[in-house]
Amino acid sequence: MSLKKLLTTTTVIGMAALFVGEAAAADVTWNVSLWGKRRAFTEHVEKLAELVNAKTNGTFEIKLHYGAALSKSRENLDGISIGAFEMAQFCASYHADKNPSITVLELPFLGVPDLETQIKLDKLVYATDAVKKDLGRWNAEILMSSPMPQYNFVGRGDAPKSLKDFEGMRVRALGGVGAAMKTIGAVPTTVTASETYQAIESGTVQAASFAPHAHLAFKTVEAGKWYTTNLNPGTVNCPVVANTDALAALSDDHKKALMDSIDEAYAHYVANYAKLNEKFAAELDKLGIEKVTFNADELAAFKAAAGKPNWDKWLADMKAKGVPGDDLFKLVQDNLK
Image (cartoon, rainbow, N blue to C red; front, side):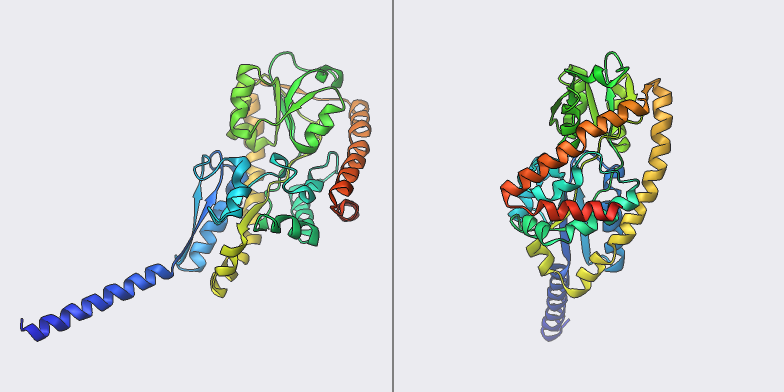
């Protein structure tokens, strides 16, 4: 090969390598901070990543990191605020002081009937100026919620025969669920999800509240001996958020692919949860877990003691913090009617 041809070939190869490098540099990768392992609670994030990848022909990749590989669950919002990762899931009651407006969705005995209603309610609350301002302090924008059904308890030791048996019992219960349990004499603690199995095993807590998927994922059913079927004191609210700067930096096509995939990710989540409920019931039977069901009179008394009094306390707390709690609570109540 002549020197001229060699130089020309080298130049073409070099330019091709440059263009390939530029193309690779144009691709977008978002890292997502999660805890635990893949489960029903994260299926919408899994689906979102899958849909975005397909819609952008792989030019926008959302990488999921489990096991608190990027951050501890209680520190995900802090990580988002400094741009340590572009996306994360967190639960409001892990740090209620950081996101007080969202905790309206964690109040006990709101009476949300199903996951579809929870999603609609979450969207309405997340769209308020109060929540946007609240999350803006952390450079975060909410993409979607992680809707969960009512919590119930798996416990060890003697199964409660009435609500009086919870008096003095140490229980893993967060947010409004913890506030509700306190009214019947239980002692709530804020053990994280990943620490709960060990807490039951060691006797640090005697019972733990979760939605069904988490009882399976964190193996509390394997540590427990009984399960409350209808206590239903409430649930927790766990948004999926994006770093505001990362969201703003997306191209129009990439942002459209992300936002247009959210409702489909929700639909996948709800369908998957329906299958999970069947699996959970079968697992309780397989393990011989005693099922504890409370009578209507006890549940009515529980709701009377733990419902409105805790709502009123929350409203007073929000007023003291300068958060428009009255407006948020009215929005929730009006839409649940």
